[in-house]
Image 1 (cartoon, one colour):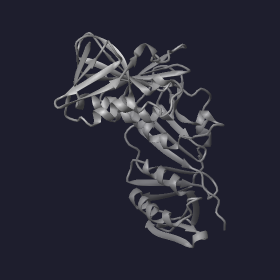
Image 2: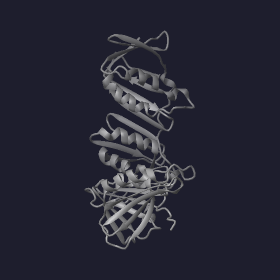
Image 3: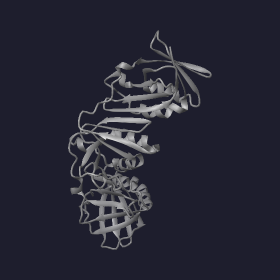
Image 4: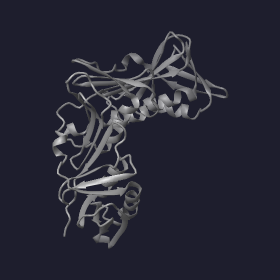
Length: 378
């Protein structure tokens, strides 16, 4: 028999994070499981989960008598431990039958386990690799700022992820679904050669990384080739298959001749959108911005149900009256992701792309969001 003892509070966050990798339905039954591995040091366990494309490994503090490795169904194991917060649990693996016996101060439970030899190993690198050491919060911010614009398009799979470029003078993260685009540049991340390297990170690992790195301190190591990427520190490691193919030339779609500018308070426009959009069309989600002298009127209308709403908010604008329409949810997401009190709307005319950016860029970073307008029927 082999025993593992741990405080539930010390392993539950790691187990919950790892279990989030597991798909609700898997072609291979073993992928429903989390693999638990302990080592000869007797003080560490690694929880591992995979969906066949993404593998996440996280360390947790335990006490074990000898090294062991087993798989247990992720959902059931997680639900069991969630009901035992604050308890100390001892797991005993019996040799006679593949059963885990769990004991705590005033109770016990039993769970089946499987042989860990059936659990798939993470995909291996098979090409020329590049390695970058980055501050975890810098990489987190780059991915988190743009992933709201990621597409979900079977015909253009290259758009279904966050594209990252490493240039000599910056790291750039971009995402676009063809209707909106977000671009984040970190000028503090440079390289000593003129090589340009890139990868496209799929949506699921993007979301996992932003969740894992919320509390990460220090650096992470990023290793990638044309097909695979891993991000790790001393406590965890995520390995994923990348999206292969060429990401579109994003700089070519960002307009340069934007002669019209308006400055709007972020909270004012978000508040107006929140109040106006429910009375607009739920199918088109069209919201119209009417820029006029020192004000913008935010309005929406649903002709079919005879509902409408409009709200005037202050705006630094001194040109001729200009009406431009956007999909309300896209506009709200773009505004929400701008990290400044004031937002600059840069336009040329109501039929061409509008660029949103913070009034003051933060530190050595630059952010912009591009929105394609909707057609106005007037």
